[in-house]
Image (cartoon, rainbow over all chains, first blue to last red; front, side, top):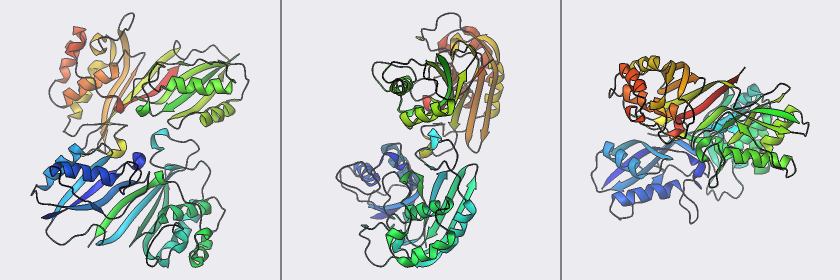
Length: 247
Length: 247
């Protein structure tokens, strides 16, 4: 058996999320259907770095699966891209000759959230950015980002019925907010993220940008360890799982 | 009665084209449904600068309609954008105090066609550019554009069952082809365009770019006045009605 690692892109708009479920189209099911075809009906299971929600996109999701077919990496790419629907793309394939697990071996994840901060909506970006038509104070949002960095208990930024097991302490290595030509990019890098964590962080930053909260409110929001102290959950379409790094 | 002019954007992906038809969702029907609601059930007809095909987008389509409601232009914009689906956007409204007809008074139209010329497809642009993975000779395509400019009978570049009445002589004021960061933009400006004309011009330019035809073949293709001498019809998703100009 060989373990195959793939970096994949997907447009999350028309998916009920990454993870397989009884009702709704999922990325995992599309991947497993394609792989099962290649294996002539033998079921092949796929493991991802983590799930993404309905409407959330990926530019650098990482998955693995095992196969006894001994196909070369460029041919894996061609075979899969031929069978997959046009909203999933296999970007890179590696045949691993060292132990590798797409979920357990994650060292760092990067998420980017895009906010279109212009008066008018852009119909061509409506699925790929969250449109906020009013003025936002980017400098304050950037200041608030500084308080997010570091090792914290992020209970306040985790959906209340998340079912997350274990502690909610995560380390954020980078957090930033930049605006260029009407498009705000909010970037987070960390060793792990709780359920809805990026979207709640963004929702809170947007309330700082609107002047409803101060950047210096962040430490007490974190300290409260209570979901109700943080801001709204920002909508999914602005969110991209951008990069997953391994040792 | 007041005549209202609107500049509109739409993502053509999920439309069966601009023009109303018995089966399929159209831009015109969505506009007329919204306007009829605003007029409390009285049917309002919309006139556009011209139709666009299924999958073709608009950044600057122009329409007009007549109303006795005496609504201010910013309120027209708000009311319509509230009622319209999220793949149509009213960008600008003018209340005309001079005679104006969205179709008959067109002076110039600009179309842009986008070709994503990179090895890998981009899932996020698949509805907004035509992906061509092999190398294209942009300089040759630009040379071919030079032969398109001017006043010609464009019969060779008109879909054979087009039903276009009258002569097929049109004047092209500008034709160009540029590549930046993997994205080729092909621009045409002219006093009018025949059915499928831009897509057949692009299909022919792409065959020049692939080396299947020479730039200097263009004059004889035009001269033949025969659809079969020109190239394939490029797919709709790369095409945008970019701007419509009036006196």
